[in-house]
Length: 152
Ligand SMILES: *[C@@H]1O[C@H](CO)[C@@H](O)[C@H](O)[C@H]1NC(C)=O
Ligand SMILES: *[C@@H]1O[C@H](CO)[C@@H](O)[C@H](O)[C@H]1NC(C)=O
Image (tube, rainbow, N blue to C red; front, side, top):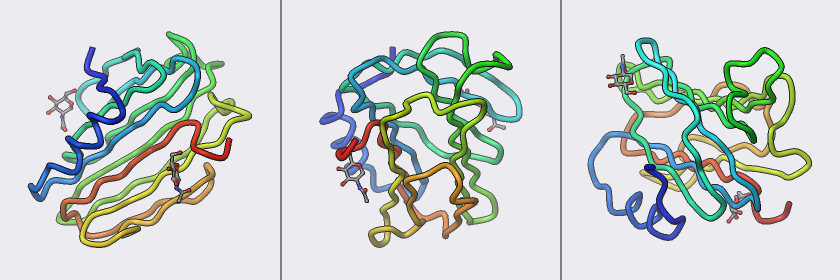
């Protein structure tokens, strides 16, 4: 179990002064979600993220993804509803995107992705799955993915 309380994860995220960018997934939903991780060499599935908890990870290398589902075993299922948060850090540039596949795992609730670092919104933000690929300098940026954001 690597989930932290949302309050603790926020403190951890803001305490980081290193240059490496990171992502924070915060579960404000009143239900469990599950995170599945993949990069070019490894996959890890079904990390439980209970309501009120967050997961903090660093963004290293390219082709990283964090999948969000509302039931276990859905990420690798062809019929599983999933959101896919993709990140890469390549040659000093940070890239990210968010999309869904099959269905939205937290519908009808809403979400947002925000970014902060050298300035607020340094790497863009979104409240939908179709905002495309965002990029910015890879310079201590924190991407925060809020599940069931405030006005849902
Ligand atoms: C893939 O992720 C694993 C941890 O899940 C990490 O140890 C490994 O270095 C990563 N590989 C690449 C190429 O980023
Ligand atoms: C994103 O969601 C968080 C958590 O509900 C909220 O505090 C924040 O104001 C939202 N930000 C934007 C830009 O919608």
